[in-house]
Image (cartoon, rainbow, N blue to C red; front, side, top):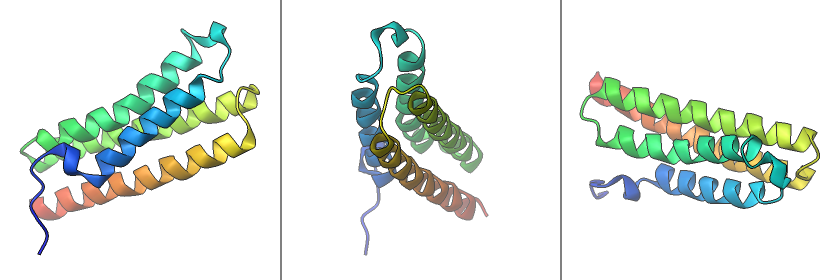
Length: 124
């Protein structure tokens, strides 16, 4: 029998989203300093938003609210991937960096979809 999850920090999805935010911050250190208020700021904010919205969704009582925040987390994950592609196109990162980020973001994306599916099932 599995234990009941009582904190967002116990969610594997949040744990992976947190690692994604850390990886994104480290990756953005490779960007030129003149991007500090541009792409660096955007990619860092979107990646942190993934974990933040998972945490906020977890704390919501109603399935509709949970799904809304988890959906925002999905959007932020997709936004982070878009920023990563642009960073690659601009020559700020290597092909191996983008492959790693794609893998991490797709994993988080799948896990968030699992949270949405669970919330929908509990609401039914």
